[in-house]
Length: 143
View 1 (cartoon, helix red, strand yellow):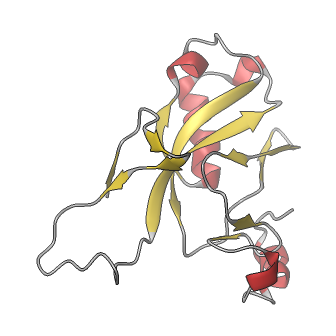
View 2 (cartoon, rainbow, N blue to C red):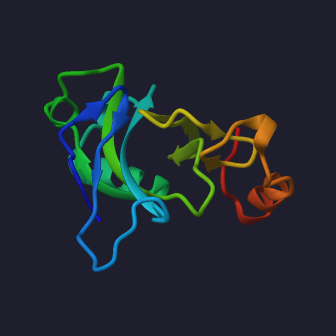
């Protein structure tokens, strides 16, 4: 998967690019992983170090990039990371640093229902009824 990582969006949705494959049909194509920006509000600025933020991002997904303003510590309200997330797994609503829980804000992902943690639907159309119990058993966070 390739993705444009410098914030390109179209009508508040991220543009993703895939490698070409023979006989590709866009209407039947599944998107299993996407790159998206996440905000980490409330994280103390002393943690705004690229290597450390990469470890935090890896709790959420696979860290691809740290935002330049975050890396330069010029923004103190939130850290911003580009993360590759697996849409087949529940999305994390929180992460832990030194025993304290912090919350994640996903940019551009409009249909997230955190009771089940899956992207692509809202409460009324949730088909993952038992996922909240599974999240608690596996230690995955949900709101």
